[in-house]
Length: 338
Image 1 (cartoon, rainbow, N blue to C red):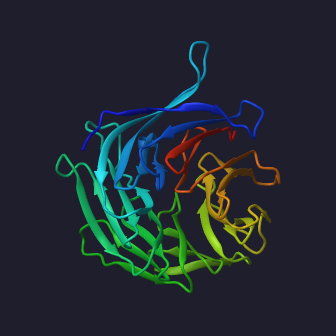
Image 2 (cartoon, one colour):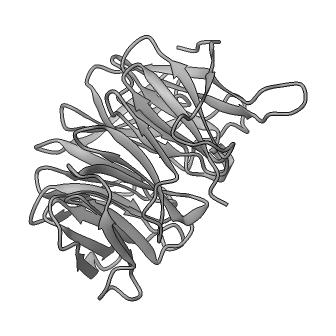
Image 3 (cartoon, rainbow, N blue to C red):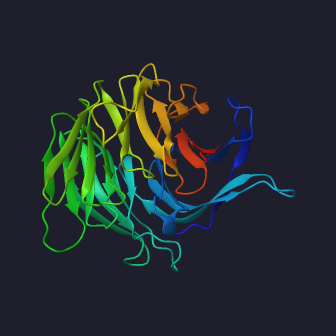
């Protein structure tokens, strides 16, 4: 179902910062936002997927910078709405998605509260295409599509990482057994055969998909590890939130971390690197839902904000924008990282 609907943001100053490098924009929705994810690809960078209670809204986000005649603003324009039944826990965009074609090609993958891993697409029949790839036996915490669209990776509380084949060539599902719940999964941007998998017990593995073997494993030395990420701008750098600490590592020198310091007193629940800076990370606390944007090497966050109910955290591919959901609102923060 296509909706010609736009959401114009309400622009508010970020009260935790006194300069003009940070500003908050608010988009309001009719129900709680459970997940929100920008497309991580250059050709579809303005696409934003927003999971609500019973539908997934996909549209484009435009950012109007301030000039002599206009004030800074953010506008979200809906392209398509996909119906769904179960609560969405994770979203991963397909590299096939594009706004340059007419009509726009919308293709993404989800994991839901019924443990299903699914594919949504608007190009198969002009309306809506839905396919279940399969399911885990417990909650799925993270999904990621490899840049060449050979596999979708998912990790779950069932102590497995599964690689679902995306091409109809007879390839079977690849299964990696973990020692604890899988919390995060991420692909190497330049080498699609390499996959990062993070476990709740504090272990971070890097797998070679061609050999189906771990090529490196590091221990966070803190538990529980709730989230990890691979820096898009520097694939030698990984980060995680484990216990109350932020831990940054260089995989070329894994014996000692680049940085370990407290970040959320009651523990963090998600971490995302900025796509444009290996030194900027966004995290959200588990109990207080406090959002922080931190610079590696500095103990003072460059941005803090309180969220009501966490349900998603994602950076724009190029623009200095970070989105985080807060109950029925999507908060868009302008964060300069250069």
